[in-house]
Length: 306
Image 1 (cartoon, rainbow, N blue to C red):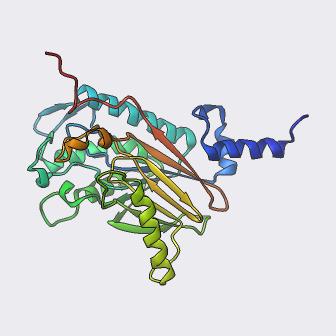
Image 2: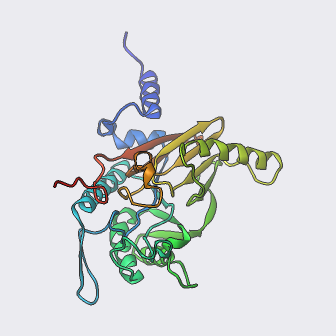
């Protein structure tokens, strides 16, 4: 029996919503544009200037000092370029960076694992990396963890990069600070953005459900308006919780495994490298597409042969 055009469209939309296909090239962009008028990219935790995270393949500072990416960083950079190309292919119109753009002076760990403590170098690297994915899009920036900023009391260095990107022709950037609530036209649904906080020693995803319950309590007490979507970074892990009238999105990172005090949880603290594209239809319904890249780079935890 021949299927009608309407049946084919519904089947295609169901397939898109279920995320059952990894071969999105077979869907024409013009068909996506009809179903999803807004396409929003979410990235987080680029941690530029960490030895374990995203950086340009080669960077030369104003003094002539040369910084080269290690093999693991080159792999992460290749993944990032692939995601940028996917954003172009899907014609994403909006980008949200959820913080920890740079690794900062990292005073919490006494500057360990930094390529350079010079914030000027870090900001230049971040600018070079982000200028392509921001080109021609609306880009919003959330501030990251305090210890990944500078130690002074001036503007956050991430804001400097945001402003510099916004000065480029055709770009529109906005610094949102630590927390922001946004409605993306034409939908009336409310999005809440922040870098993220808290953690769990064992099962991190349980925090998404805990926070959803706290949010419902705040809404019931009329302390907050109804929030439809919460998006955070910080954990370096991907996760998505979809409840009635609510999405919680945990955005992955652009860094390999980073040594820290809880190395005994080495197995459970492996990161997810990648980002997320949110496809929003005319009624504000969301299809969440994670783009996760493997294999993970082995930088801090490389295999030693003796």
